[in-house]
Amino acid sequence: MIKEVEIAVEPSLSRDEESILKKAAKTSGLPSDEIKSIRIRKRSIDGRSKIPVYRFLVMVSTEDSPDEKETVFNPVTRKDSPECYIIGSGPAGLFAALRALELGFRPIVFDRGKDVRARRRDLRNIMQEGLVNPESNYCFGEGGAGTYSDGKLYTRATKRGDTSRILELMVLHGADPEILIDSHPHIGSNKLPKMVEALRETIIHNGGEVHFNSRFTDIIINDNKVESFIINGSNQIKSDSLLLATGHSARDVYYLLNRAGISIEAKEFAAGVRIEHPQPVIDRIQYHSEERSEFLPAASYSLSCNLDGRGVYSFCMCPGGIIVPATTEPDTLVLNGMSVSKRNSPFANSGLVVTIGPNEWKKFEGEGVFAGLRYQSELEENSFRAGGGGQSAPAQRAVDFLNSKISADLPLTSYIPGIKSAPLHEILPSEISTYLHRALKQFGSKMRGFLTADALLLATESRTSSPIRVPRDKTTFMSISTKGLFPSGEGAGYAGGIISAAIDGTKSAEAFAKWYSGK
Image 1 (cartoon, rainbow, N blue to C red):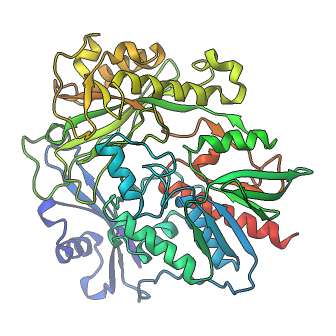
Image 2 (image 1 turned 90 degrees about the vertical axis):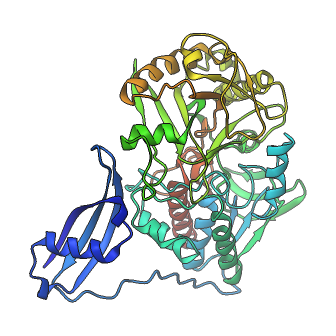
Image 3 (image 1 turned 180 degrees about the vertical axis):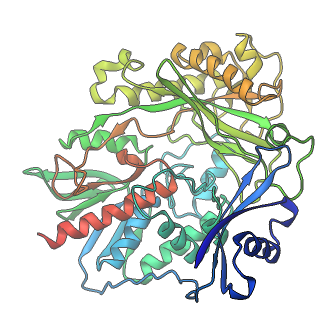
C-alpha cells in the first residue's frame, strides 16, 4: 500500500529529515513494522496562520520501492548526424539542443551575446557606468535573461510538458536537488552560470557546437521554405530548417522576420513599475511577526486583481533581491529583479504591471503589427529621460504616487545605478498610472502595511513578455507561413519564464525531429 500524507512541521525542524519521516509514518496510520519506504515529494511554506509552518507531501509505502530513479540523459549523436540549427542559447535554445542530442541530431547553436562568464564585464558596466552593450547585457548572452536575473523556476505550464524532466536535467548539470521538491524552486543568479556552462559542455562533448558573438542577421526564404540564414551579415549557412529561440527582447529579429515575409502578429503584454520594500516589511506582513525566524526564508508575495476586465498583478517577485537594469538599447531604461541563492538582500522587489492591448497602442496603429512594440519602446525611452540619462531610474514613494505628489526625498534602494525623484503619476501613460493607482489601494487592503512610506516605485518594468508572436501550427510547431521554421520560447510568444521556455524548446526539437524524419 502507498499513502501520500501531508504534514505540517515547525520551521526549526524543516531540515530535520528524520523527524519529518517519523511524523509522516505516524500520520499515515500504516503499521510501522510494515513501512518500507518514505519519500518527501513536495515542500512549501504556509504563512496563513499566525505561526508559519512548512508543509510536506510525503509518500509512505509498505511495498518494496525501487531505488530512486536516476536522471537518464542518453545522447545518440554521431559525427555524421544531421544538424539541427538553433538561434539563441537561452533556456529554449539550450534545452532544444539537449533534446536534439537525444533524438540523434547534432545541435549547432548561435547566440548574439557572449558566453556566461564574459557577460559579467558588460553587466558591471551597465550597473556601475550606465553603459549599454546592445549585444551583451542582462537579456542577451549565454543562458538568456534568466541567468543573471534570478533563476526562478515557477511555472503554470504543466499542461505543456514535463516540468520534472527539466528540473531533473538541471540537477544533473549542477543545480541543487532541492529544486525537485520545493513548490517554488529557485536557483539564484550566483549559481545559474555554472549550470549553464555545464549544459554547454554537454552539448559540445556530444558533438554539438555553440557559437557566441554570432548574431542572426537574415533569413532567406524561397517558395515559403527556409533556404538559408545569415550570421553576422556575411556567414551564409545553407539549411532548410531553423529553430528560432531568440528571447522576448530581440526586437530586431521581429523586423527581420517581417521583411522576409514570415508571418508575425501583435499580442498583449504587460507593463508598469518595480515596487521595492525593505524585506523586513514583507516578512512582518507575511509571517505575522515583528522579526523573521532564522529558519524561515525571506518572505514573498503574489498579488493580482481584475479592474474593468484588465489584469493588474505582481510579476517576478524577488524576496531578498535587488533591482537591475535590463536595458538592451542605448537611451532606454528597463528594470528587472533578481536574487542570489541565499536571498539575503535587505530589500524585496516585484514587478507591478498592467495588461496592455490594442486599445492602449492605438496611437501607434500606423506601425501595424509593431504598434505594441513601439508602445513598449516609448515607455522605456520616457523612463530614460525622466531618470536623467545613464541608467538612473525615475522613482517615487508609493504613497506620493497615490497622492499625485513628487517625493521630496526617497528611501534607500537596492538599485545600484541610482534613482531620481520623478512624478511617475505623470510620466506613465494614464492607462497604466490609473490602474496602478486603483490596484495599489486594493493590494494595500489585502496586505496591511504594504503601502508603507518606504514602499518605492521605480520605472519602467516593460519586458514581462514579447509584444509580438510568431504564429505556428499547434501540432507541428512550425511557422504557419514558412516551412522549416520552428519559432520557440518567449521570443516567439509561447512561454513565460525559464521552465516554460525550456519545455517549449524541448517540444520544438521533437517537432523538428518528426518533420525531418518525414522529409
